[in-house]
Image: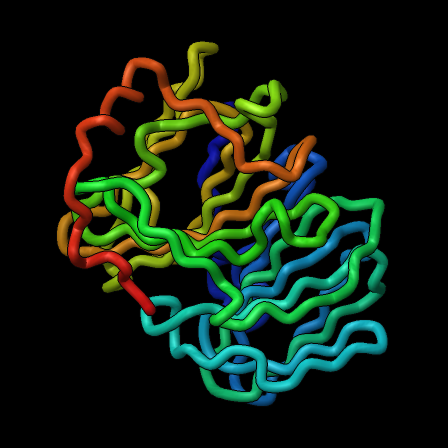
Length: 279
C-alpha cells in the first residue's frame, strides 16, 4: 500500500513547492498545488480539465485567467493571522497566471475534474462562514470557503484550525460510500500548516478492509484520504491548520461516524475558549 503522506519538493524555495497531481494521488477527482513566490514572481498553472479554487495562504497576489483580472487578492501574513481570500475559477481555462504583489506569498491551487463551467467568483473574508465545531478538547474552527451550496461543479474547500492538544475530524468519520443523504463518496486532501512550524500533528487513517495508518505530519505536508476514517490530533504546544479539498459523486459533505466512537458527541458540553483561532 503506497504512503498517504506527500512531502514538499526538496530544495524548492519558489514556484510549485507542493504538488498533489491526479496521477500522483492515483485518482481522477482532486488536486492541490502550493505555490510560493517572492515579490514580483510569477507562476502559471495550466489545468483546463479542472475547476480551480485559489486560496491565498499569505501575502497578496494578482491573478489573470482568461479575460478576468483580479488584483490585490489576499492580505493575511499567514494562515494563523487572519481570514482567507479565495478565487473560484471555472473549468476550461488554458492558463492561470499568479503574480506576487508582496514578499512571502503562498497560494494553494485546489482543483477538481469538472465538465460544467460556472462563473468565476471572488470569495472575501466576510463571505466565509465560520463554524465552531465539537466541544472540550475536540473544539475546532471551520472556515467554509466553498460549501455545497456554492455554484460549482464538484469542488469543496474548507479550512480547519485545531488548537494545540485538541482533536479534529472527530469523532472519526468517513465518506467513501455513495449512500445519500447519509454519506457520499468524497476523495479528500489535507494540506497542513503548524504553528510554530517545528511542531507536528498526527493523523490516523483506517477502515475495516485492512487500512490502518498512523502518520506524523508536519508543516507544508499533505495527506491523501481515499477512504476510511481519518481523525487528527495537534501536538501539545502547536496549533494545527489544514486546508481540505474534496470532490466526489455529489456536492455534499455527508459523512458517517465510526459507530464505536460516535457516542462522544453526546458528552461535549463547553467549547474551548481558544476557538475561534482566527477572526
